[in-house]
Image 1 (cartoon, rainbow, N blue to C red):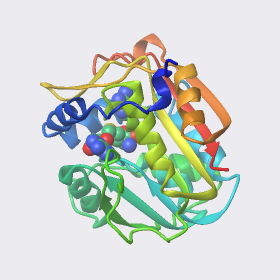
Image 2: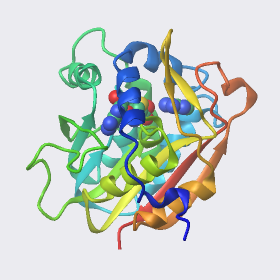
Image 3: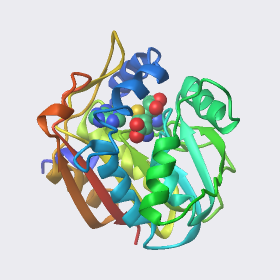
Length: 268
Ligand code: SAH
Ligand code: ADE
């Protein structure tokens, strides 16, 4: 019997995974932030700009429940993805594969001069939530590798697992093929307690993105059906799927993304 592509039963594509890890050595946090987290992609005066769309999805999903530990998988140099979670989770753990990205986040947490200015993001989320200030509940930035059987350092999480996971633009951009994407999703799900939730944001139809002027990271192009099938194979139940299609002026030459998905799923 033939196995479907998403089933992740084939041997892991170690060479492909190692090749992507080598590409990541050229990732430049400052350039990545400029490409994706400044206008037009982060234009708070427009509702059809990418970042306001993502923040609205996250705001809605996070305000539907309350719990203790939230883990952000593959934070990169960004923290917009956990802002709405800060009010509802007592503990927020940021994670990334690269030391350069963990350092970028630590710099912001330490209030260092010259770090990326997240103020417009904080203000926008305060506005969405109708409040004036932020309880910043994240202090920890841990190393992670979603291709390892234990992605996080031992003892980082409660024995039962995290209450919620969020991950944005990570799994498809660290996986050489759909089988590796599915395997990474399944491994990520193993960090979650039964009954916990996953919020997954990612690129549709993307084959690469630029992580510095000459650093092209390969991405496994996904469509909605593949995302749904990978969730199913990983034992996660889909609760909501929203899709954003890029207006022409959001195609700014830093990738070939055609759309963005937002998923809320639950581990039974
Ligand atoms: N979450 C951020 C950053 C996504 S960029 C955002 O929404 O913009 C993709 C991130 O995946 C990078 O920060 C990169 O360092 C990280 N990464 C690379 N290899 C990884 C791996 N094997 N496991 C987990 N994360 C990885
Ligand atoms: N925003 C952050 N990362 C992205 C990616 N890889 N593609 C499109 N938009 C992004």
